Each structure stands twice: as C-alpha cells, then as structure tokens.
Length: 267
Figure 1 (cartoon, helix red, strand yellow):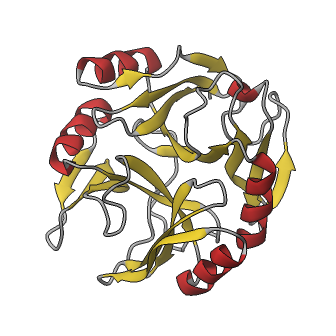
Figure 2 (cartoon, rainbow, N blue to C red):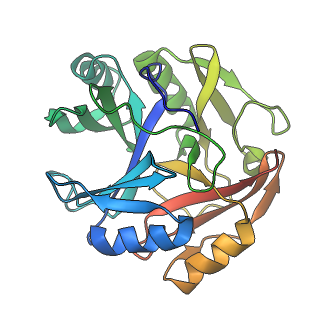
C-alpha cells in the first residue's frame, strides 16, 4: 500500500470518523470487526485507526454543537480552503454545524449539512493528508450522500465542489456500488476526471423516518463472516446482503446505531 504524498483533489472523501458516545468501546468494536489497530491520539480524546500502519479512520467523542445528534460516521470532503468552501455551503443552501477550526498542526476542518440535512465534514490538509483508499479489508472504498431530495443534492454538491456529475445506470462501471438503487436515481460525482463519490435517492422501501446521510463503505474479505461478527458483538444488519456488479455488500449499524456499509469487492 503506497503512502499518499499529495492532498486529495477537492471534493474527494479524504477522511471518515465516528462520533460516538463511548469512543473507547467503539474502537474495540471496530478493531474486532476489521482488524484495525486503534491508538489514542496523545493530544485529545480521539483514536486513529490503521490498517498495516496506514491511517484509515478516526473514532472520537462528539464535537461541540453536535452532542445531541445520534452517533454517526462522518465523511470529510477535501478542500483547498475550508473557509471559502464553508461560505459556498451556506450560499448554496447548506448549514454549518461546526465553524472552520484548526486541528493542531494536522489540518483545518468544518462540519456542515446539505439542504437535505445530510451531515458531512470538510478537511483542509496540512500535516495529515487523510485516509488512503483501497481494497484491503477495513479500508474506505466509497462514500455517498443519500436522501429523498435527489435534485437538491445534485445542485448543491456540484455548485459547492465543482463536481462533474454523471447519472448512471445500475450496470455502469463508475467505481462504486450502485445496484441497490435499481428503483431510485443515482449519480457519480467526478473530481479531477475520476468518480470519487456518489449521491442518490433512497430506495422506495427505506423507512420513511430514515434521515438523509452520507454512507461510507469499508472493504471486507468475507462479507458474510463480517456481518456475523458484527451481530455477535452488538451490531445489526439493516437488510439482507445484496450482490451487486461491484461485489457483495451490506448495510450495518454498530452498537450505538451508527450506520455504515461493508462490501466484498468482486475484483
């Protein structure tokens, strides 16, 4: 796995972290699930989780201003200038939950919601480039914004991040899992000429109370074994696993009900 030496192109998911009520217990759950090596940051109540020495995710307590929100995974999108992107978010109908702030010498961040109230982060790199993307078990392979406001999401994300948007069919090879949206609209979001993320509408069978959210996908070598392990340690399968053109995938919740997906890639 090669170390990344340059920042991710703007708009690329470049970090994910979990805001948990009990981050220490959450670190134990994901360590057991993915084989992550999680170590507490010496400067704060935050665990950096690694695969083969590479940073892949973070686990921490809830940020000021988000304490009343449920435990959740947050996808961070790369930006060259957090403050300018934050201003673009509010101009496009989004809302800032956490104003731009420095994180030691590692970078500068903010947390926002889109017009559908899907929560996401911004990350401007200084010392910490973020996560690598790859197919090794436990690594982030895809992330997507899901809601019932598909048209609003398309307009918002293309305006804020300058994505090229490509609406896709379920059999097109755009780089992320999409077959689960056979009865819903979906688009790949391109940055620097490559599909980096997606946005789609909820499948009609989704419960009406499901809030808009960004869903991260983590790779696994054995989907069914990962699901079984999650359920044995307090997680829950939200629906039957699904075979897609990109691999076998499932959506899970952890013991604090934070939602995430796992996929056993077919290639």
